Image 1 (cartoon, each protein chain N blue to C red):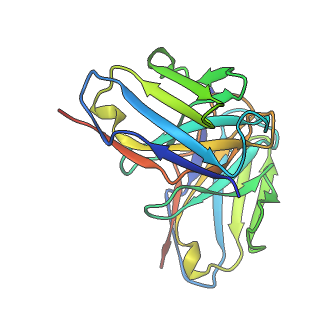
Image 2: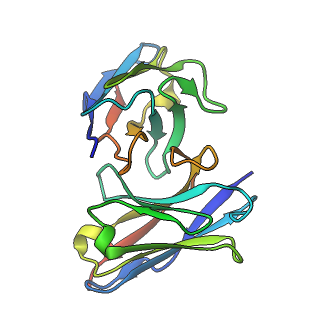
Length: 122
Length: 107
């Protein structure tokens, strides 16, 4: 069974860089032909897609965040990562990693990681 | 970008009753629409994809319909575990926007 797990600091200072990693178990990123994505949810708010990456490294980003986001993949560690630069309090959210399904297309998200709360505060 | 609008924001329903949730796209997305359920403190769970196909393990009381710009999620007979927030998401074109959610609460 495929499982995704987010990890990273729970507290980031304003203007610094938020860095999160998603570790995939129960399947291989490099051999599975899937896209992998990051989604966030601000407290009490809805879901916001951030960006997605193919196992080959091809990326897609939400235009509103594109200037501040990098998503990368490390197939040797079976992980993909998110970096969000110059964060503000508005970036405080639960960050989820998820896999797009089915293979090779940017369609629905399934499964999801459990999510990790990142608070931006000095 | 394709904006997704869900209605109502909150739906009060008694257990055993039917719930009907709506999702509207700002332009046609054909049938490239998914529905998710989210309970407090949990990640969203895929319910429906392709507008009407239930995901693996999803009970038959959940059904999706619609195409183009108008979509509906129906829960035929609400069970206690169905009280949650439901989101729609289009995947016709990126950015992959979600609706703002419909909270289904106990009446």
